[in-house]
Amino acid sequence: MPGLGGVGRGGRRRRHLNAEVNIINLVDVVLVLLIIFMVTAPMMQGGIEVRLPRAASRPITSSAAMNLTIDKSGRIALDDVLLSYDQFRAAFALRVNQKRPEVVYIRGDQAARYGDIARVLGVVNAAGVRSVGLVTEPTAAP
Figure (tube, rainbow, N blue to C red):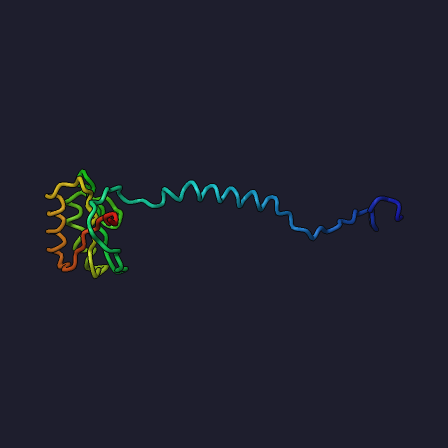
């Protein structure tokens, strides 16, 4: 029965196994994932947008730090979570007791009111934090 076009014993067709990998579908999936990551990556930076004041400064080096951000309207972000001043005042001491940061860095928008930053510094001081840094943009080299 060799002339029956691939029909073997018992009337069943024999399947020829193809050992090659079809990578066209894999390339399509990879390209779609690449596009998704390219679109979502800028959104992953999160946080509050602030324009930092310029001053002579050096890079931040401590990894055991806590970050506070104050935007121009006086909103406070504790580790990228937006809080009102009353919520911040209630939560900050608890967060300090949990994390035990070496230093607290305050990123204040250059248009933020001095009073808002002073109130935040008062809460930081009352929580027992003794090392506070004010984050600035470095000035351009002359």
